[in-house]
Image 1 (cartoon, one colour):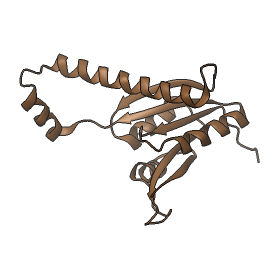
Image 2 (cartoon, helix red, strand yellow):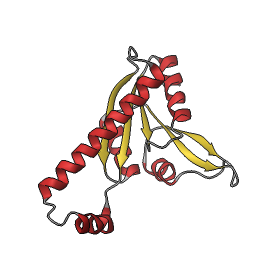
Image 3 (spheres, helix red, strand yellow):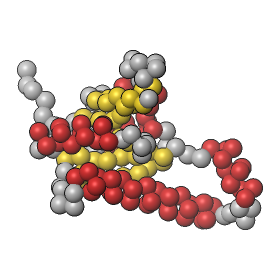
Image 4 (spheres, one colour):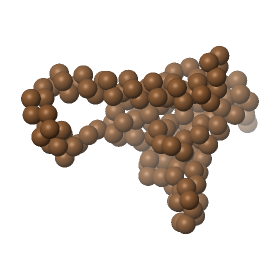
Length: 160
């Protein structure tokens, strides 16, 4: 029986304010295994209700405008992730090999991306309300572990 090695770790984040504990687990594992980290955020689509509200306030919105605005928002999210890891690791760190923001349903997009990049481990956090205990698993994490063929490390983030 061979012991698994980690070369690529996918850190999936919701960009929430409590994302440091899960990222620090990814950092520790990457340092221990001399692996690279890919940071991924999946932005959920706006949906029909959101689009209706947006069109109400921007009635002359064209498809080009919509795509341009979406690309700008995704670019800002990527910059936020880059700033976050530089703040956590410093300018000279080469642990993070890629920062990507995509749109879609989170669990499905994480699976698709993990498969395409052939990652060895997915690290993600789950928000746990301390009054309910640590037994609750976030909906994205729960969906992902039921559809993926790779190990997933889910780090509880306790909120009080």
